[in-house]
Amino acid sequence: MENRSLVTIAEHSKEKILYLLEMAREFEKKPNRSLLAEKIVATLFFEPSTRTRLSFETAANRLGAKVIGFTDPKVTSSSKGETLKDTIMMVSNYADIIVMRHFLEGAARYASEVTHVPIVNAGDGANQHPSQTMLDLYSIYKTQGTLENLNIYMVGDLKYGRTVHSLLMAMRHFNPTFHFIAPDELKMPEEYKIYCREHNIKYVEHTDFNEDVIADADILYMTRVQRERFTDLMEYERVKDIYILNKKMLDKSRTNLRILHPLPRVNEIAYDVDDSPKAYYIQQAQNGLYAREAILCDVLGITLDEVKADTLKQQRRNRL
Ligand code: CP
Image 1 (cartoon, protein in one colour):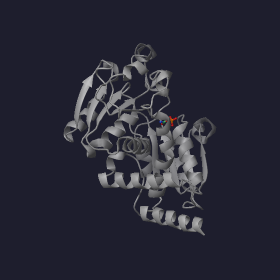
Image 2: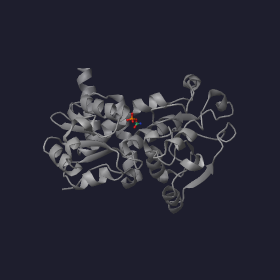
Image 3: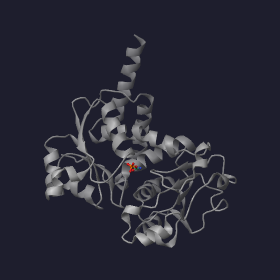
Image 4: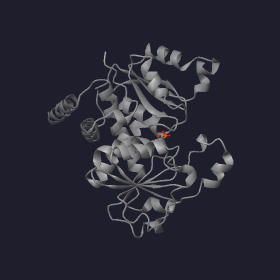
């Protein structure tokens, strides 16, 4: 049987990405449906989360599914020494889909290889975060009207930030120009720069972060310095507040600029930016609901045509 897991966004074609975005748009029109009635969604979070877990669980609930899972591995038998393989095989006895966040890079891939139940990678270490990428792409599309030919500035922790790694790979279909703004300690890893070169993606690296550097940005993608990934906390202290975006820095920016951030924010966006019409990070998180409804349906084999037919059915029912 085909395994429909979502482990990395790199496996999705341009057509598949656009298809999922269209499905997300259907869900934005009408988030509440019964498409997943009788399904069980398991959310296994071996690392902390607010948005990803809650938006997946909201998506499942709004689609009529039931949710099981855990938010703290310490209260599970993994704290007694149960392996990830055994945990996944056990949960596969109960659930139709497993949404998993894990601290180990490659954990989602591994999980997808030990079960027939589809796995959705909700973040694996510093590696990938494909569902975040779908909501990022949806947010970019909604705010720019296109995904093509954009200047995308990624700022902050480009070494450990899995959201920027996934977004970079997904954007290969859309001819972006990337600007990577990071201190030397947190530069975009070589493997992703090689990926850019292999896919003819233009990129420029910067260490300065000021209003002139970001003046021609369409998207300013801010990131948090990922304290939990540092082995040397002195190094974290040195770099944690290196870039802080404030409202004044937007003075020369394009009118179409939108500021994204996967959140949580720590210190890297000053609160005075929140009032700017260019700040989009809260709406971005809301888009996560629609993108994740699309992901759950797609992974469970529900097609865009079925979603559209459901929309029409609802509209007819409302007219009666
Ligand atoms: N963007 C994101 O992954 O947020 P959470 O860690 O709160 O899930």
